[in-house]
Image (tube, rainbow, N blue to C red):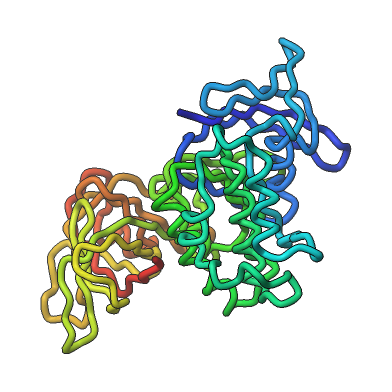
Length: 357
């Protein structure tokens, strides 16, 4: 299953030129700065805008210029969640949800109301009108309305950008539940690093109307030939499993292919799946392990690649801990002193690991 999108759009000052092959499952984040083409690409996929190109969603052709085929938006089995909830103000939450449900005959409904209510925690809100809902509650109802159209794909255009931090933290766990429990591919537009790190499986990085990088999240973030920075620094995101908890020191040990690390205990039960983020600035390198240190986490690694960083005094080093990638930042002087080169065995000393979901 895949989503294949090829578009060329020229509006004078703005151009979009993309040729993408994205997975037809999980969450694909379209990430980049303002004006990079994220929303334009999403609107072309939805059929809300039109440009020369070709679009195929899990084997179904929605646009093919050569065959003069273009499905209008209302014929595309998609759900669209905008930055603003855009609920009908005169309808209750229940009636807004039923609006989405009634778009399909009963035989074509693959997502039922009860499941959406449970996934999004909106059963207590059903009799309220939008003016009696918080921003996060309105957005959850909007997501529910989109899901009840039983879409083949869910398009989300910065759905949390209009919310304050508290409301964003309220809704993110519900988005994680959708990710884990619904088999509907999601294209998620965002320029927020925390959302991408927490939700995405696949990353498309856009800049100036072009896809500068794309691929599985961890592998794409580990590219040092074209570093993709989620916010303040280069780094990687890994899926891990909780294997031990230390209540005395409020720590948990999480395991991923290639090793395990201690993190602050987030309250997750044993065997729970979590995500961790390790920044390049939080890794130091050593040729031998140093047990007498405040650094809790030391992993044996192999150097794969070395590249220039943004300052001439610094270098980025791509490492492999088993099959898992890591990225470290060191000074050029340290790289020379350690004689860093591809294939070298050494130890990554990880000063901090963030639990992101």
